Amino acid sequence: MVRRRLALHLSVLMLGTAVVRVAVVPAEVCPPVTAAEVRRSIDAAAGWLERGVQPDGTYLYGYHRDTGVVQAGYNEVRHAGIVMVLYQAYAATGSAEALVAADAGLDRALGQLFDHGDWVAWAPPGEMTSGGNGLIVAGLVFRRQATGDHRYDDLMRGIGRFLIAMQFSDGSVSSDWRDGPTPDHSLYSTGETAWGLALMGQEFPGEGWGEAAVRTIDYMVTDRDRAEGRFSRLPDHWAAHALADLRPDLLTDARIDYARRLAGYFSIRLRFESQRLGTGINLWVRWYPGTPAGFGTAGEGMGALRHLAVDDQRLADLVGGMDDRVVCTAALMVDRQITPAEAASGPHPMLEEGAWFYRGYSQMDDQQHTITSLLEALPVLEAREAGR
Amino acid sequence: MSGTMLLVAFIAAINPFRSRGSLPETPTGNARVAPVVIGGTLVVGSVAALAWWSGPVLRALQITPETFKIAVGFVAVLAAGYAFVVAVPTAEPELPGWRAGIWPVWYPRLLGPEVIAMALTAGASNGVAASTGAAAVAVAGLVALVPVRGPVPRRLVVWLGRILSAALVVVGIWLTIDGIRDV
Image 1 (cartoon, rainbow over the protein chains, first blue to last red):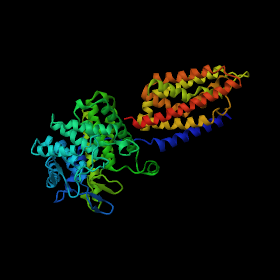
Image 2: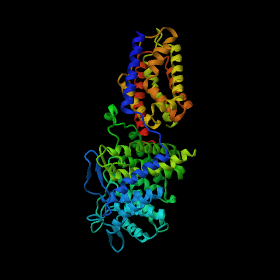
Image 3: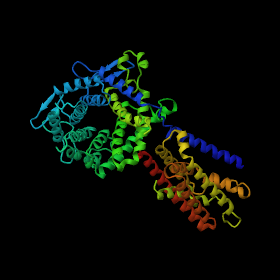
Image 4: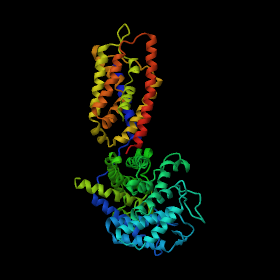
């Protein structure tokens, strides 16, 4: 009788354990990765963007590998994101091709400026967005830092004043200018604006840019999600960048607490992603590996906050976990990137090689966000390999 | 987990009030001391061993301690829900003499899945000593309930067991949220 009951209890325990294992906590798979592999991966992804430069300064927008069809249409804010990430890649790798490709996109933007008198803004046909201008400023900051070229300083200040003109008194940010700031907000333009201003604060200290960034950062800390009708906190990677690049004396406890919360959101996203295999039962409980842009944003957000945690004692307890997440993200993305051999069998190998695809489709921001997340992983891997 | 939360978590998971409802008893209605002490000692030892091995176990399972908290929260809520509904555990056939401390007191009464899971997560976050100490306090509570007999005290014990089950639901939800927010 005891044996029968013992067998019953153990059977239920084993079955329950199996269900929890499969459905609640599948293995978090992080393949091994080296700094050299990450560097090659960055080069390959930047190569995809560089090959996509069009004669008019736009970039290849998207590609369907199953049908061999290039995606029509364009997104101007993403254009600014590509310019920015190519400057980031140039700054990190010294790749001349990345600089040429970034400058091509920047030249196109320079031909679309709108001079208001008080400020200047990048205004591609039909739109003048705070988000796009925030990212163009970020790109110009990285260009300035990497090249030492100061020829765009006045332009940067002009765009910075546009970003301030888009801020409302509560720190919220209008997404578009149409004879004035519209009352609309968009998902990411608020964080993009704050980041652009925070970077301006780094480059031009004493001019008040950091203080302007803080107005919008505090709106994100306190009111944004409720005011803009979101049920939960937005895991905003641009907000993470803004905090990471803010002047240290502006990092109040409330802003640091927000950084801690953001790190938690990115972490669960990254841990969840590492559980995704995209096959068998795992496909039913975790679905396909996520979009590279989505995964990359969480990775770059975590990487940005890691910089902050390394420098700020109030977040020092998070550094170990952040390092693990950033490295795991890089490992997965290196593993998922299309290799030359894999690309060779497709209809247009050069439109596949170096890219990340989600269910057969890759878009330029897939490469953008993933490159940034890989760049964030490099110093961690280098330190680990050096035994630091 | 804070020290207080750790203590509440182990007391709610081991749930001495509910466990008292199905301990081997003497003809007078008291719980038999030897099986309770043996079973209690074994469960404290099991918690210590699981807490000690939590790192290697989680690494072997390829689960970060932060994510494992989510699973523990899930298990705790399910176990607590069952314990709330079935307030008195099913009586199990007993091994003779002191061996009743092994079956059914140690297992399945005290070393339930929620206790196993709690020991692994607490070991990873709070260490072996704190986890073992919290489990020992819960077991001491069970030993203190050995003399409880008679219908009124027993009914009270059942309801206190339900309250601890409700507390385990709260602990489970807290663990899940903490696991989601952890870095």
